[in-house]
Image 1 (cartoon, rainbow, N blue to C red):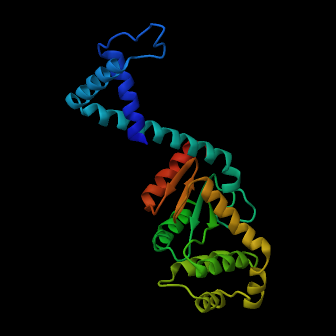
Image 2: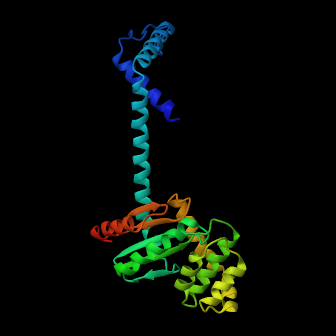
Image 3: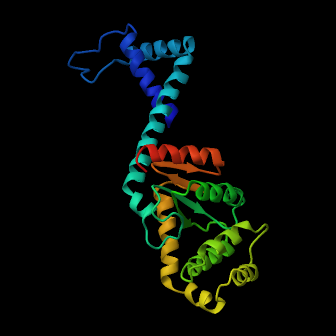
Length: 254
């Protein structure tokens, strides 16, 4: 589709610069060029392209840059429109300073290896900075066990033990199972019977569905994904890049 559009633009440009005959203007042909003139134009355009093949690549590059700019602008508008839902949903757990001047939002899955790899650097930055709100969006996309872990974590939030449970689950290596999830819950001091009962509350699933919808709007297709201020950052990032984005967000007012 991009190539076709670029070629159409190239033909239009060529028609403006190439010496073609004037359109037929008699009563028998009022709709444009004659068949002979069309053949001559096509031959001229073909020759021009063969002599200057670089114009195709230039046209493609311009169109791709234009499309990327349009996508970037649409994303910025989506981030602005949905920032309250990203940063201020009362159903989302918050780690760090609840009154921090910069908010990091993370979409994650407990079975995501990249999420596990950024846990340490992220928590270190939140602790060292002291003025960061870390909003955690349960985004279970890696199977049924991920969904159970997400529901269990939101239920743990009701017992005031979200953070230790979250850190313990993400700190595990290997695949999750229900037995492992219950074992971790016991180790952090959760009431298992209450946890399992709270997990059946429709509000828990509703909260997870909110994360799915936000991810769809922002075209988030994998984990982890972060929003830091007005920036969306897909994929795992290091502590230095996180700190730089936090500093940029802080300079821009949070």
